[in-house]
Length: 429
Ligand code: ATP
Ligand code: MG
Ligand code: MG
Ligand code: MG
Image (cartoon, rainbow, N blue to C red; front, top):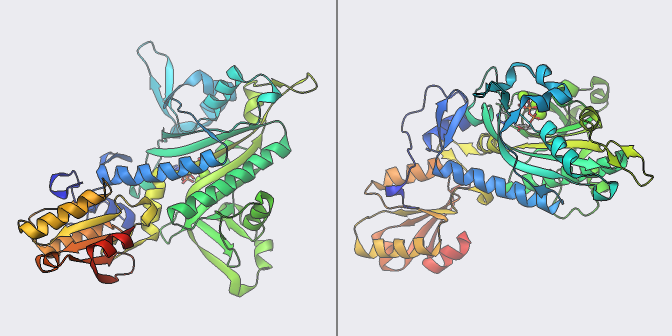
């Protein structure tokens, strides 16, 4: 993308309404604009990050054997009357009336809808287990939307739902999702700790939340420093992995167990704030029973499948990653989800040799570089590249260009390298 002709409206001033770093930086870097309270438009760089995160989430859901579907955002109130949640959900649900005065709603989550779809399609135990999932916008009329995309009203969520024959099967699905989540966070380039959590609105008896540690997090978290995320990419034994993730103490304030906490040596106790980026639940037959989704078992008897649900806040992750990775100058993107692999900074726009080298390097990236081809001071280009947080900056001036040399800057460490073009491109990868 050429910066001179792109919709990246960076701001020099710090927007007054933004109280925390990620919100400020997303506005200043031109990633998002607020369209109404808690409702955001995603501009090109924001959209690119969101899509890259969604793609990693998708690949790991697929790898776990889940199947992607896409359900509507607008749902019928009758569906929610079947589970009894239409009244129970309260004011967080955005209720809509159509022209025929039929009651609709903008989905805050999809347990009812997916259960209705399964009820319609799945008749025999032979067709289970299944884990359908989607990456779709949700709406919750939050009482206090704040912190930008961290607590929006409209937000992008990956939601998966498992359907199993029995409790043991459901626990296997739960463990598979735990592994898929840890792989997802590892690939994205952040640490999220699974914590024992309350089941809240969804109901049920087993749940973990995944928290990114940040002082601005809305949840209080307590964990044993002996916790190690380990390498989820190489984990092969799913039971051993689950054990490792869940036996060392980690809990949110809602589930904090002071007796267990007191047994942990003082020097290992860690207390802080966390941003909830995902949550998984096992809740048995709560919805299959309420909505009468029964299948025929091996013995010819009908039974209600055992269910779980699994959410990841895809749009919230964008903010959470920035909370965990920024400095005074701006965002520091992990490589895997950066809007662009690199920024190409032309320090002498209009100089034939410099322009030619920049164009050649830009072309070699396909669409994965941002070319700062504006007629701007070098200082302004550096500041904007730092603000936007590209993992690499390829800095090209007339002197280097004449000798086929460029300067490479690594955003995360500030390291700089003077390299021949070929070596610089190899390093960026
Ligand atoms: P919170 O405790 O922050 O209100 P929640 O527990 O109500 O979140 P879940 O029902 O567990 O949310 O939804 C799954 C995931 O969706 C959450 O872990 C979070 O990452 C994301 N999410 C929930 N509400 C919002 C929101 N208002 N804005 C952005 N992401 C959200
Ligand atoms: Mg909530
Ligand atoms: Mg929560
Ligand atoms: Mg939750």
